Each structure stands twice: as C-alpha cells, then as structure tokens.
Image (cartoon, rainbow, N blue to C red):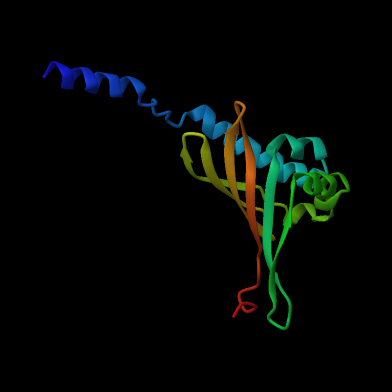
Length: 149
C-alpha cells in the first residue's frame, strides 16, 4: 500500500498543471486579431508585424471560370510588405469591418474569426514567448449568394 501511495504521489508531482484561459488571454487574442485587421486597413506594417508569428502561413483557395482550383499562400514577410504598400487602404472605409469572435482557447493555442466585410479570416494563434500571435490564417472571399455552385 505504501509503495502504491508513493508511486501515485510521484506521478502526480510530474503531471503538468493545466493552464486555464484567463480574461487577459482573451484580451490579448482579441488585440492580436485587431492589430492584424486594423493594421491591414491602415497600411501599418509595424502593427501588422506585431500580430504575426514569423512563420505565419496565410492561405486562400482560389478558382477560375474553368473550375480549376488552387491554394494561394503567403508568409509573414509578404503580408507585412503588402500592408506597408497600402493593400488595405484601398478598401473603402464604409466597407471595413473588424468583427472578432474567439472560438476557443486551450493552453497556448486559440482559434478566432474576423468578419472583415468582403472576406472572412479564420485565425490560429499561439502564445509565443509570452505573447499571443497569429500563426495560421485561412481566408475566404465573401461571394454573392448566387455565385457558388
């Protein structure tokens, strides 16, 4: 019995403590998402960079009129460069949306969605070196209801 109790105590001592979601995590995740989308609209490359992990993968599925489909992807450097070149500043102010919804937070991983008006961004975030940053984005251009098969 003493051996069993000792082993149980030893096992429990090495089980990692579960880290629960905190209000600060939710706030930091929302801030990263807003820095990303508001940075895009403002053409603010530094703000965009602050929201991204250096190994960001951003992807969108595109297709042509013949039905050919492909995945277009970009990394953090290209997205920051496009932001600095004014990419988002061409979106009319009345068409800019920044609606952020956090879906889930588990330890150092989170998922969220941004409704940007003309498109939707699905984000994966990671708590990296003490900061929440975006590591993956899958986005889709909003289609009119009659344009999808």
